[in-house]
Amino acid sequence: MSALTVSQDPEQSWDDLVRFWEEMEWPEGSKVEIIEGIITVSPAPAYRHNVIAARIQRRLYSVIPEDWEVFQTLAVAVPSRLGMLIPDIVVAPVREGTDTDTHIPAALAELVVEVTSKTNARTDRVSKPAAYAAAGIPFYLLVDRWAPGGPTMTLFGEPKGDVYRLLSAVKFGESLKLPAPFDLVIDTAEFPED
Image (cartoon, rainbow, N blue to C red; front, side):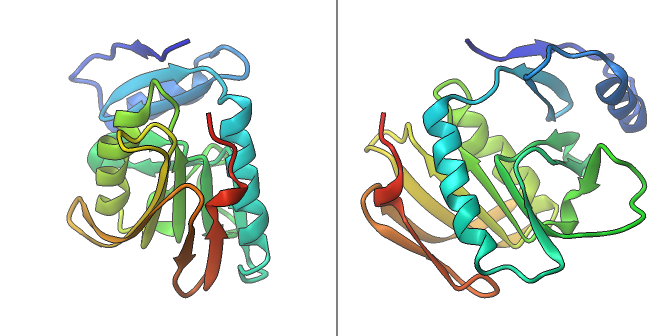
C-alpha cells in the first residue's frame, strides 16, 4: 500500500496545519506526517522494517545518557520546512514541560534514523534529510533497503543550511560506527534483507 496525501489550503498558516494534523481522526495504526506542507498518511511499516529499527534501538540504549531516550513514534517539528516528521527512531534528551504532547522541536534531537520502505525511499533520501539538516539535527542515519546498488546504511552529519555532509556509508553485511556522543558500532549483518 502506498501513501495518501491530503491537500491543504496554501494560505493556511503553520499553526493551522499542525492543529489540523493533531485534531483529525486518522486511520488507526497509520503514520501521519507533514512533509513539505503536505499531510501524508502511510501504512504502518512492515515487519523487516521494524526489525531493523528495533535492532538499532537496542544498540542505542546501551550508549545514551540516562536523561536521553530512544523513540520510535515521536514527531519532530520543522516549521521552516513545513515538516512534522516521524522518523523511525529519534534520540533526544527528555524535556519536562514541553509545549505539546504530540511532538518536539526537531532541534532537540541528537540523531534521527530513517529505514526506507519501497514507497517512501525518495522522501527519506531527499525531503527528510533536508528538513533534518535545516533543523540542525547533528546526525541522520539512513538505512536504505531499496538503494539502487543494494541495501546500504549511510551516516550524515555536520549540517549546514539544508544539507548534510556524508560521514560514512556501508553495504548490508558491513559495520558502521556512529561517532561521539554515541561511539557505537552498528553491524548491518544483523539486518534482514528483502
